[in-house]
Image 1 (tube, rainbow, N blue to C red):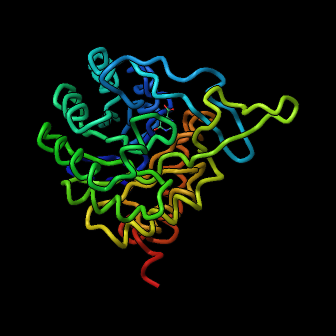
Image 2: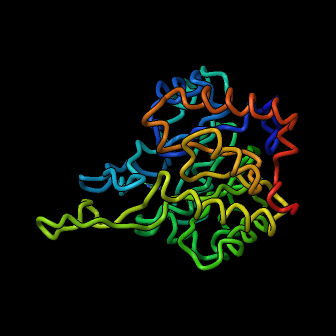
Length: 296
Ligand code: RRO
């Protein structure tokens, strides 16, 4: 009932693990796959190994989490083995990758074997990477085209909400040949400790995830659905099945869950079984839910 084909991948359900959560080792990705996810996305992987920003790099705030991990990763040169282990979970494994240029992105995509690539042009606190490249439509188009030329796997582009016009960036990804866009990465944010007056995060500022950002993400998905031909994958603050349904009604073909996995590793099984009961009761299919909010 929940199965679908997305950019040529067969998924048993439209629920995926978002990049950045439990995605650095094959063992943790496999564990999430076994907990019912339709696909899993790795932590973002770059050219060189990076240890990330100074701690504290993740803190809980009202209705969410603030992070400035700083793209810690082991380099693509040490990562294929983790993807291969993750595959034992029996669902598609998507490699999230980042780079400073089209050449860096295509070097990684041309070397790793994964079921799809998710291009991270949206991390809000990465000097020379992420949103710094992903706020320029021309660069997004070039990077997407270069990766499409480097791999036969589907290419998804993960967008930042920290721009005036997310549709323009989505259209640039589509022009570059993207098979889908993913919206949204974290929202640029900050917290200050009032005892000391110091910013809480080691990096001073970071990205907000979790329930607080869901309405921001819903609006981005809604706008992208209207502007683009390619599928939109929704992410941002999903914590239960109702949120997943809301994203699909806004125009998401599939959704990703990140922060909420920290509280419940079996959230994918929970969300899919509740979604199925709801759809059975309403006699609705995924296609009936898809984009409903645009039809009124
Ligand atoms: O590693 C991070 O600090 C990070 C990344 Br790559 C991202 O895409 N989004 C985010 O909030 N943090």
